[in-house]
Image (cartoon, rainbow, N blue to C red):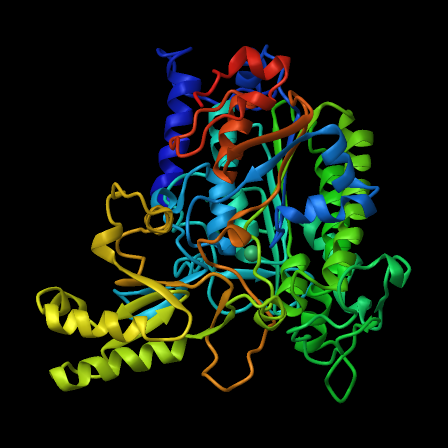
Length: 581
Ligand SMILES: [Zn+2]
């Protein structure tokens, strides 16, 4: 990490000092920072003053079609004034939070950026690691809270985020600021180094030593304690008749302490009534957390003067509450409909704030989501379609049973994480040279209810030429050393659950499959350089970073995505090549 930082500093030093003034000893002159001077000289081209990346965690692409008639704020404005890509979808199988955010932020696919899941089995250390877990940094809490043990950074992300490249290539004046409830969202949007990267954990706003603390966040956290939201009541924004579906969402599993009907009161489960983990989960599952993130972002815009650095600043906000609400209540719920109505209002306020402080037309906004969601299986079953729950422990049991008579040491499976099977050390190597045992394992897995297919790592490596869209999607999220030995594909509309068969699951529904309901997400661009309109061509969220890069004169290392040239206005058309169909 430090070597990288040193490398960047040395490189910057060479560019700034040695070339213009080779004979002299480098010495810092008084006046504006050298990076800003470089920016001023080298930046006669018009650029947006601020890039705003908004990610809605778990927003299905069809929510825009379905609910926009009830929107009047920022989501509506994006649809009306922006470029709406209606057929945007991830081309890979691992439709999870860390993967989606990393794809949006880098313009690369997981086979390139390496963030293959929210968490995976690390073979070297024989443990599950989250995508952001970094043993060389420690987390720091704001507002006098207690940070969780360990630390988080983007060190496992194998390519820089667009925001990092923007700062590096434009001379350093760029400020990078991101907010989310989730570390894996705030961190991957920003990249390896940034000015302020903030997430919510253990009842506190948190960052890590990879980024350092920022006084404006400390002041905001102290002035606006989340604990003060205890007792707030989430009520329907519109009359009951405005809501689709059933009042009680079918297959829903409400967070502890909540019923399946409105209103939802944020309350404590502890005897003293103080803020506890039940309250924090309810808060995260309410529109109040989105509103909080909006106000926090507005405070950063004001306090840091984002959009006024002389370069192009970067603000990233990932709204997590739609994901918590979706996991609990599912996509066919009054809760999802209402939390989006509230988010529309929050985003309306955020854009109005940006208009006032940065200037309408001086900033560019990109909104997308990290993945969609599947309806709760009980809800889907009502249609007569094949839907159900795939119980991961059953897969594990079938593998052990298949290998028992073949004298493999137990346990043969080290872990099943997401849909990836990781064998104990040496087992998979042996299976590859033992066809009867391999066949027994694969047949065992295929016999589990809800399994559509299982792929071996060798079938996914090196971008195989295949006609199968599912296998191609699995290959696009395969990263050697991190992905499993076997990758399970559930049947469509089957929910993958870690709960044993016959036991209740702790959430209503989920995501993470190569099916369109998980892959299809909104992509909306608005503002500087963007041509408004509806676009029906198939694109992916990996196209967002290359498009922002084209608008800001930045070169990205990966070209997994392409420039969305069809939506670039006069400014963009001058700089962006027209993509081949
Ligand atoms: Zn997510």
